[in-house]
Structures are given as C-alpha cells and as structure tokens.
Image (cartoon, rainbow, N blue to C red; front, side, top):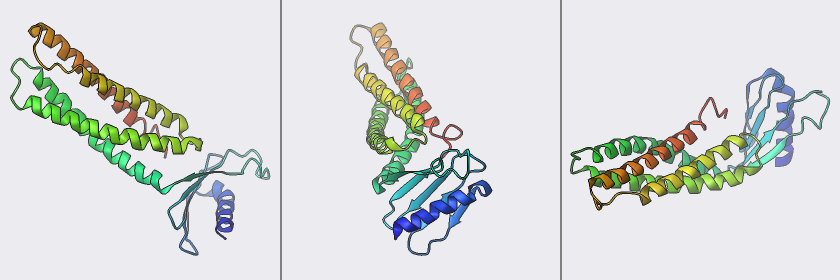
Length: 223
C-alpha cells in the first residue's frame, strides 16, 4: 500500500514538474510528503517521510522526450533516521567551531607577544581541547554520513571535497599539537622558531577547515 502511494506521488511530480516550483501534498494517512519540483527540464527532487522518518530521495534526470518513461525513471536513495540525527549534530558542532577558531587565534597571538598575560597559556590549552573534541565529533558524524550518502549522486563531488579538506585539517591540528613549544630549551630564539612553526601549522589548518565549511553553504551547495 505504501509503495502504491509512493508511486502516485512520483507520478504527480512528473506531471506537475514543468508548472510548479514547490508542491506540498497533504497526506491521506499519517505519511507526509513534500515534493519539490524544478522548472523546465531542471532536476527535481521528491522527498517522502514515512511514519518512522525514513527518507527516500528520488532523483530525476533531464527529459528530452516527455513520452520516454525510461529517461524520467527516478533513482531512489534511502537515508536512515541516524543520518539526519548525525547531520544535526555535525552542523551544530560546526557552528561552535568557528568562534573557537577566532578565540584560539586571538589567544595564540597574545601568547606569542613579548609579555604574554598569565591567563593566555591555560586558555589556549582549554580552547585547543574544545576544538579537538568538536573535530572528533565532526569527523565521526561526517564520515558516517559521507559513507551512507555514497549512492546519492546529488552533491557527491562537493561532499567528497568537504570530507578530504576536513581530514587534512584534522592532520594539520594533530601536527600543530605535536609541535607545541613547551619551554624555552635551546634559548629564546629556538623557542620563537618552534612557536612560529606551531602557529603557522595551526593557522593553515584553520583556513583549510573554514574553506571546507564554507563550500557546504550557498551558493556552492544548492540544497
């Protein structure tokens, strides 16, 4: 019965796609559906939410002949409940990461000044620990979602670039932690050189992670 309702929804999407941009079909039962229809021959998306919040995404290719059923056949991609839970966690962890980046950069520069304040070292370490925790959360949730979305062609290239950049940022922050200057062994000049190397690696990792975050927002990401 549910498959019949899903087929009816897809049939409505095909017929109304050239004439509507957003169509909401009220459910006859507890199942709710939202159909987003592109204009002209642009790609369209149909999302079905079943009672247990299972998500099915139907991707339509461009049609050259409206009578050609094969060209308009949808490709169904199923997403689990866990996917959307992880996506929410991933997004909120990303929102929290950006202000921590700014705070860490500010405190790090204070720590490298000729007369660093007494609070700078402890605050720098606390912020670094917070960033490490958020990056661990985002690496796990992002990696699991990247794998689950592997069969969805929509946005696959962007998701892959995002994941690779975040892994590079992970490696960069690990290297920054490993090069943290603990003392002035070897003299002040040696300490400054190690501190500058640590800062450059950290700043490069921050830039990489920020680019990875920005490309997942409009106008780069369409949905």
